[in-house]
Length: 361
Image 1 (cartoon, rainbow, N blue to C red):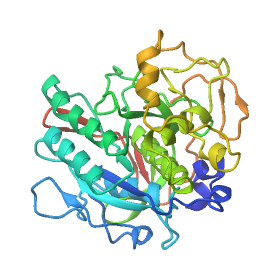
Image 2 (cartoon, rainbow, N blue to C red):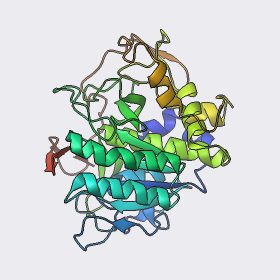
Image 3 (cartoon, helix red, strand yellow):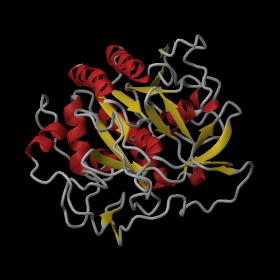
Image 4 (spheres, rainbow, N blue to C red):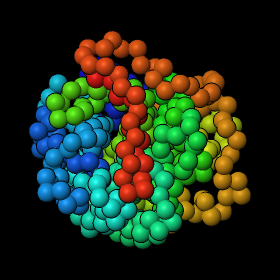
């Protein structure tokens, strides 16, 4: 599975691990729960909380989605599955997908911040009512004031309506879009001014379902997990930085469109490149108490720049062109077991959670 993790190679992960593995950083995964029996997650999970009221506990994961995200973030070499980008970090599992989604999500965000999670990963999203936005926004503000960074997927509707997803579209949330193996924006990746950064989100190997099958996933969910892990790597190496400073260097060192116009409505401020901070020592942390994303949005005269014609890859090399491609085009590995299923849609309390295509391997 490690040989199939193209994103780790593109990001020069094994060189980064010589300096930082994310040690000392807690990443909250607000999702469907996290299966503690997964070999790659043994010793990686902190006691979390189940806000669904189902009584099954936070380590019960019917969906398999939260487990997948945890593996992408903090999976170790304990099993024969894929490795996480920040294997030294710890995962705080929080189960929220069920019941009154907005209230559960708000409680989950506040709980994560109170538990000291520096990074809060929300690999889910969808359309919500104005009332639900009013419930979610104070929780996001609370987490930011407590010193957390909140990352959320912008959604997988870029090729079918492009409806903005929440909580990624809320002020104070770092919205994450997806790119493919050639670092072109994925066709499904929802775009707009809510996109702050982008990360690999096509053909990502991970674990799925309680049977612990190997899977290949597409989606901004996976991209969000990779962005969260990137923040953990940087924060571990610079524990004295604030959430604003970590975000600022991520924005400054991200792979930009060739024309330099940012933010781009497809890539935001660019593709995350933690190695630029850790290996190349680039990026100025700047003011500790100023959120660079909120400040940039408040001063930008053109929040949605023209679609870029080219982009830089994870090593700084120009890639031409950056035309959006069909999701899954870069997945050419043979199927070991199982089948490829179409994306599913689950409606929960007014929220639509999109699941991208998943191929069992």
